[in-house]
Amino acid sequence: MKRPYKFLTFAMIFGAMSAMTSCGDYLDKQPSNELTEDKTLGSWSMFEYFHNDTYNFLLHGANRLNGSWLDAATDLAETSFATGGTRTTFNIGNYYGGGGAAELSGTWESRYRAIRKCNRVINQMDQVPNDITKTPEQEARDRAIMRAEARTFRAYFYWELFLRFGPLPIVTEVLDPTEDMITPYSKRPTLKEYVVDFILKELEESEADLLPYEDAWSANRIGRLSQPMNRALVSRIKLYMASPRFAAESGITWQDAADAAASFIRDFGGNFGLFAEANIDPAENYANAVLRTQYTGNNNEVIFFRNDVTIGWAGISQDTPVGEGGSGGNCPSQNLVDMYDMADGSSPFAQYDATGAPVYTSGTLTPAINPESGYDEASMWENRDPRLRATVLYQGVAWGTTRENSTIDVRPGMADNPTGNANSTPTGYYMRKYIPASILSSNHSGTAYRLWTIIRYAEILMNYAEAMNELNGPCPQVYEMLDMVRHRAGITGSVADRADLAGKDAMRNFIHKERTVEFAFEEHRSWDVRRWNVAVEALSRPIYGVNVAMDGTISRKKAQDRVFEQHMYLYPIPEGEIWKTGLENNPGW
Image (cartoon, rainbow, N blue to C red; front, side, top):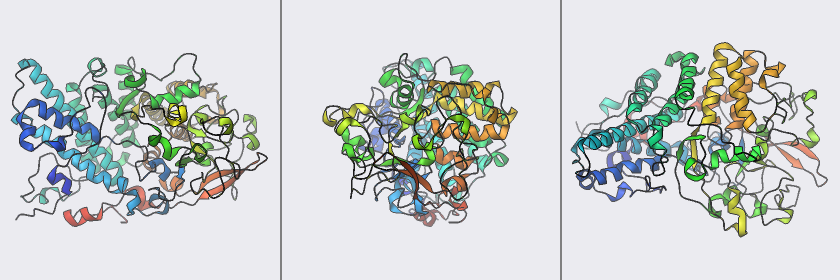
């Protein structure tokens, strides 16, 4: 029986391609939506165009959800303007809202389009004529590289679907829309079948044929899939699979996760490191760890990233303080600010929970203070972890070029909190991280790269620290990894000297906090709290902020209530796909 219209997604039938633009000698290719199938398979050069377009399917996190960031769907931030996608969807428990479509249903559609492209490369490559300009050996090597890239991409796109929807039917062939396509793909696999037996197997089998570091990091190939990228992705996935939410079904252990991170450090640690230029403010080094790559600034920390063209004022205006002429945008929360340690490495607060957040005193908005830290509510931003000022714009900090004194001023009626401006920060903070300051120069006429980092070396170190703590509790390897990440940012003192981190549970909560701080606004928090099985605790907690009075007095406030229930660990499968496929929706939807 033929069912030409009932299918996983219509985009898979027609194979429509993204028309986004990348930069760089290797990735700046003609989008394949301009090519017919005959032309695509007619020559090796056209087939390369078709394959290289897959890089355009790597997501960029900035303003991706109708102007908002995914971390604004977590406890780290709140979008200031009313039309922000997270405000009208995630924040109020509305997982079918159009404002969040780019994440809630758009990822389903675009990931399956990308997977279909990968399937075409893998399955149709043998139909493409040889390139007569190459030797047989070079021809064979190029085909092996392309096939390995397509397998790695396909595994990554299936992983992105898994994070949002759980295990889904795995399609590895190019399906014919005139045939009955649903019957073989209507049953959802187990977690082990999907992640361990397919995704990890694909990655591990394809690594050897990918470009090695020496070739992939040459000037004209920066950003191309490589053996280090593949191995780094394996480290991330094994850490997730060893985590409380997945371990029982996956069979992946903390030892497996530790071994995966250790293998990257062993084999590629000589090529990568934590970005730190000499004689530079540590906070600036931390900020540049995501703004630069080897392609745009000799940054050896970034392993896997989305390559994009330069941007100007229009690219950052949505997330720039209103006093600078921007729209406010992704406004950090006091919840996030409270997670930063003191600059000497001590904890400002007495206790932290498994979400990484300090424990707030019952009936108040303030955590119990650690008196030995020197923390003072009246000057809460002083002497803090330098990553705070590299991530968050707060009262009095220098920023911008058009405002008086070029400092943030969120006092009532002042530049960044003017009366009647609906886009003024609801939390008392604005975003600093991922915003190239050079764009603000010369009356906002500057330009800069803002490439999207998917995996950087700090994650590998943090993966190893987390897995080793789960295996052995606090130990020298855990201390070493954490100190490397913290000292790069300018924090003094060693984690090993902290008496409050002597046990595995306390160190676990500390590592959860450190991951949150280090990777704020890099799309980690949403998935970390889920894999730790603490998403309800983290994401249903109110968003806190601050008010700053005209005399400079700081007071805490509740900025927004949030909704997150157990069934929201997974997104609902888009309604149109349920109708077309007959797939069972996720529990609770």
